[in-house]
Amino acid sequence: MAAYKRVLLKISGEQLSGDQGYGLDPQFMAWLADEISIIVKKGVTVAAVVGGGNFVRGAEVNWPGIHRVTADQMGMLGGVMNSMAVTDVFESRGLKTRCLTNIFADQVAESYSYRRAMKHLEKGRVVVIGGSIGRPYFTSDTGAVNLALELQCEVVLKATNVDGIYDKDPNKHDDAKKYDNLTHQQAIENPDVKVMDKAALGLALEQGMKVVVYDINQPESLAKIVDGQSIGTLVTA
Image 1 (tube, rainbow, N blue to C red):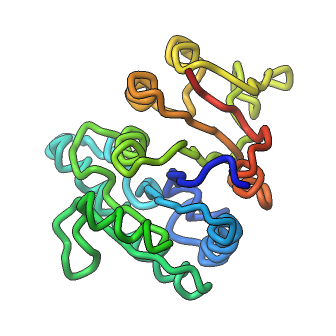
Image 2 (tube, helix red, strand yellow):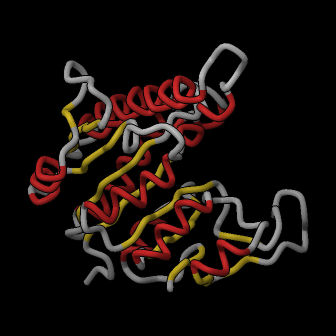
């Protein structure tokens, strides 16, 4: 029996670009669809929040003449484009998927509402949410925790390219130590924990939402997590 019955998967736009560093990698998206299919067959319902950093990162486009609100909205639109692509690829792999967005874009995706998303989840469909919560100054990480709470998910699975949270950057330091478990408070107070923004961790702390930070590139890592195996780093109360 699965340890989790409903999860929210947070995927960055950069991960969808694969090794290209920009745009979209259809092979990676197809592989991800197959990974998600494994847990769907176990009876796990899945919501996914997709970032847009492979196209635009709002915080980095706050140039002279471009307002921060506009920059963040550009990033949200990048997330919507990614969600559209993910939905099509998932469907092509036999994974029933619906694309919802908090951005007003009825021609390309369904408008997000709590009841609509819940109905899709109850029917066993993967719900892909583009544009996060549709508000500036909130990262897609914070949006992911917010939506996980709203959709009654049991855990946020924060996909990264490393196998958990370390006390320092493991790509720069050979002696970096991996944490198997952290409390929300420890993750917030530690300035070296940068894998998830502090606002997201603060909301998770306030509402008691579990977060698992794991390496998305490891085969069947999702299946192992929902089976209750110790994969990545668990952030909990």
